[in-house]
Amino acid sequence: MTANRSRRWPRGHHLIGTYGLPALAALLFLVFSVVLPDTFPTLDNISSILSNQSIPALLALGATIPVVTGKFDLSIGYGLGLAHVLTLQLIVGGWPWPLACLAVITGGAAFGVLNGLVVEYGRIDSFIATLGTGSILYAFTGWITGGARIVPGPGGLPAGFTDLYDSKFLGLPVSASYVVVLTAALWLLLERLPLGRYMYVIGSNTRAAELVGIPIRRYGVYAFAGSGLVVGCAGVLLAAQQQIGNPSVGIDYLLPAFVGALLGSTAIRPGRANALGTVVAVAVLAIGLAGIGQLGADFWTVPLFNGAALLVAVGLAGYSARRRLRADAAGNGHAPADAAAPRDAR
Image (cartoon, rainbow, N blue to C red; front, side, top):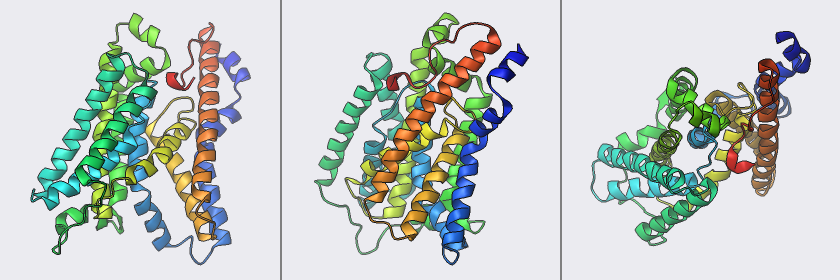
């Protein structure tokens, strides 16, 4: 049986699927370093990329969690916008900044639970449900801000709060360390703990998960709660970065987050969403955008790049999922089950 699998899927194909995206990131960095030798391969540029892409990376990791169970959380961009203006509103209103951050992060997790309940127990498609709840969040953002920016007073924001984003760790932006910690935590959760394995089973085949007794609704709520928790953390970090509350800023992060989550499912563990793959995908996008930006590309190239990347990511994610299932079916000696790509994307 192993021989049959080897014939169907040569080792070279497996290596390309697993390490193709990291190789692309390295190739892009090399190409831009050759084309822009004075500006691109510098510590300042690397630090800038790490700093600027830390929040998109966190949001992409948050989006990855529901994707593991076959669902999408389209409210993350709106949640990010609300979390960041609410953090600033509380701090400007006199709350101690640690308490304000804790309240916003807890609120993000609670809203994630609400999303999960609406999707799993309300039996509403996750696209529709989270688009609706996201619109409600956007309305709350407008209500809190009155459509205007939140600007701190003459004293500014507490230094301890702004240091959440502005400080350095081991000579690099501290925000990059948050991405490393979250990636390690999600890798442990998804790859080594029963909770993550159950989520993968649910995302691959809901019927099979039901037959073996996995409480699919409960784990679906867990996935959305995890996504909401990460969004709350990202919103706090965005507030520390921006230092001014912009009621519409969160929407700009939605598309890159899903590009990272979907494109990441084609790398490291092809055919399944995974934390390491998501980070690699964000790195590819970050290097590409930084490179074309330094080459003097027009502003419209950014949405063009993100939109094209999303189409490629969805296509590659579906292909990787189907290929993985066919390989598993060949190894098990039976026909493949339902596709492992997110159910709402089929």
